Image (cartoon, rainbow, N blue to C red; front, top):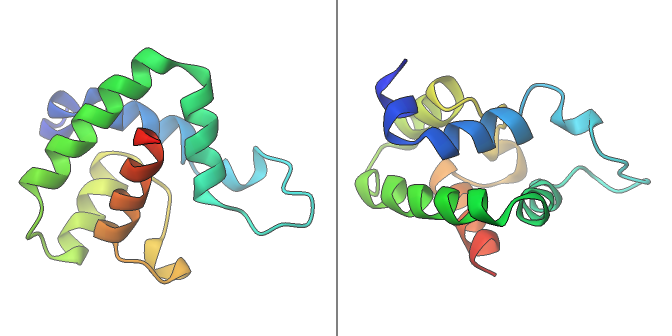
Length: 107
């Protein structure tokens, strides 16, 4: 088990279960562009206890990696925590993407 998996088990679950390599095909987009916001809201609707723990871990993660270079942040989020998502593809840095996820989780 990797250091990040030990420190952030709920984030690892969230990213690997909801942003796995087939996440784009798991939803019926009905002519809309795939949206990470829809995926995060789906996660929120499924398990409130997991949402609380994941929110806390994401807050901790962001606080500890606030000054992290975006390429290093991508390495952690994609390769260590299992998110199959390319934030620059939608015009965001990984820092911005994670902040947007946190905002949705706290809604």
